[in-house]
Image 1 (cartoon, rainbow, N blue to C red):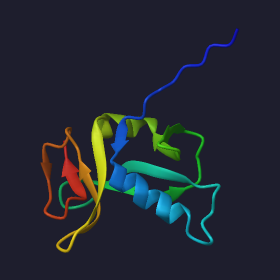
Image 2 (tube, rainbow, N blue to C red):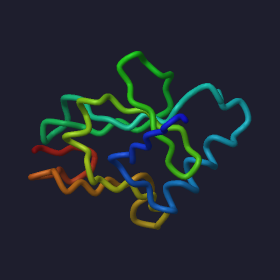
Image 3 (cartoon, helix red, strand yellow):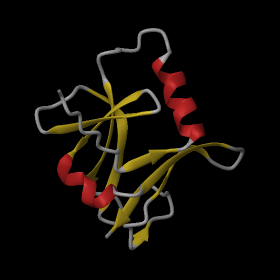
Image 4 (cartoon, rainbow, N blue to C red):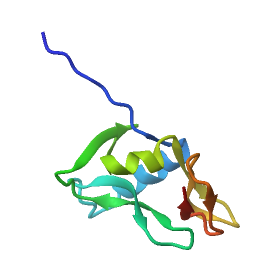
Length: 116
């Protein structure tokens, strides 16, 4: 008998974020072999910036599925992103993905850069 181990993704996507990502994935010409990459990189006004985009899987990636969306993350990024929620805002004053990270000790005004 085979045992399967399920690992919950360290990040959550709101229903608005899921709807926008699925809309982007349904666009003509979208490369269905790509995954949604969530991560961090050095830089930005607070020290680290978020990565959110479509990318190919790399050997050191961990894979997850969130609401039917294939997601990849570097294992090392989990310590910075664990518990984070990604939302999508389509309002008049702000439009785009919004990151709510409980691990961030400070964030910048644009909301895409943080420090721990």
